[in-house]
Length: 453
Image (cartoon, one colour):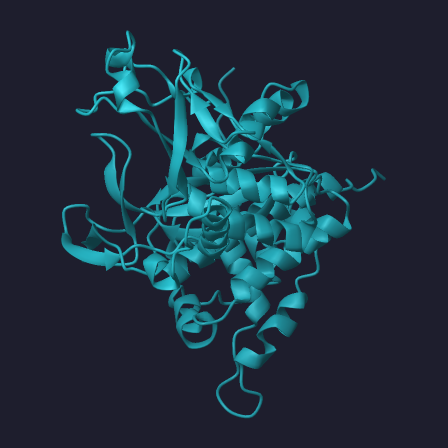
């Protein structure tokens, strides 16, 4: 039977509290129960004057407003304020009543510029929440999963100018230089002077005229854009253990060491680290193994041209420090380059009549060159470990951990693109997004539903 509602109770007066209208299992209740936000007062006390100026808006309220935006994936702060005005759960979370005035959306931006801009406040908030997760023994950091994702910058990809810039110094450069000179001395060669390594190398880049701090990112012919890279590490439960933001044209491998060092500092040294093929470099393999950590790195296909012998067809003799080709000829050591590669050359006279010459080299003088990195043995050890059952299981969990973290961040927390500009503001977004995700997971895991009367 069709029933029509003939009563309109919009103007009905009732005695009710805000607390009664927020569902018992609402996420904001779980978050409020999981952590005491008063720690923010201590973090910001030096950013406010105690003697002059107008009374400020409660800094805890400002940070909580940002958490509402990033926890619930609201696309902008303006929209967040609109939601708070009508959403009773959000008002309850901020400690507002029915008629309390919500701050104007520009208030947060003004406070950021005046108080928070050149501070590490958001990083401190992220690691304070992470410490809470660690203290509750929810972290399982024996296996760490590292990766990065691109976040589309607020910049037109067609508005740019080309510039020549100096190539970035790699985090492991000093360590590599020491290894190269030690290797050259072991082979009876003079070490390179410091100025040989310090020679400036330039490269041409596209710099956005809208957001100069973003980087031009090319994935394929269809995906060309200005972007930022969010590098992150996660444990096997999906808690984010650390993050670094860089321009989108910075290679993943360059941020591996500083990111892993942050994880070790805040959560302890893991037993194994899993990463994708972009991190499979001699420097990373050396860093992981020398720190007594197991690398979980994938198989990578040889980059040899079709129809030619692959590098693994040549056998390296560690005792005599030489390579042996499939026809039994010895490729002898010649030198170690400033890039860290030992060079092994064949005898062109012997190669001239070799039946495999056309599959071996295209050299005009019939001489084969093989380059071996000074840390190549670490990469070979990582390849050996790749076949063990334990490492196979660890690597397979990437899709359930760090890849799911990025998927959730983009689908549920507004991290697919950004309206902010500049590296510092994007670092703020990364810290708040990942802090919100950690807080949300911690709140859900530690929540105890109220007992029924």
